Length: 171
Image (tube, rainbow, N blue to C red; front, side, top):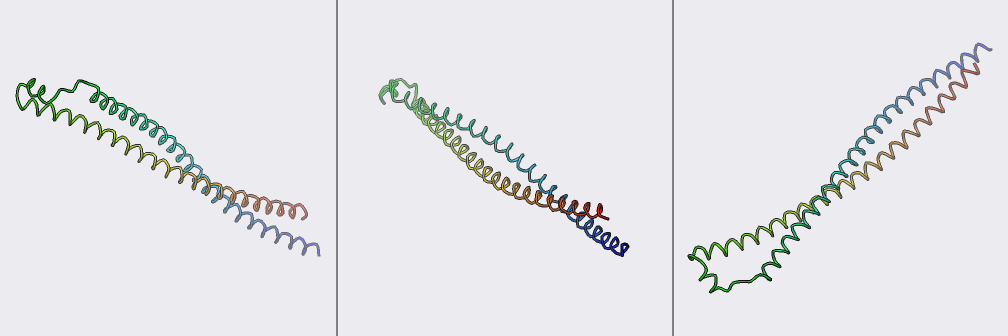
């Protein structure tokens, strides 16, 4: 009778050992997935910080471009603007008049282009940063879920080990 009981307990121990090994295998896989998610979350955090610094830089560049543009506009309106007759009389040739007008026009257009490009870059960086923030939040959520599953699996394995050890001690 005692031999039969020992054989039954030994059989239960083997079954529990198989369950422990299976639970450990699942736990190992989950821990590997968790490590990958944690690494991705870390990299996204670094990327988000770099993008934030880039956005701050672009905001400064945009502010400087707008300031330059504003100064030029003020200069245009506050400086002595020669009348058409003064420009014509002061010029050496008609080409000089055309060149001066063209130069002023080109400077104004260039200032506008610079301000527009910097503004577009700032908007693009803000959008990219927002996408990264959303991705980071999604990865953080997934990482928490995997961590929870990992903790649950660890608890299952620990319960199985405890049961196996209890049966081994009773044998």
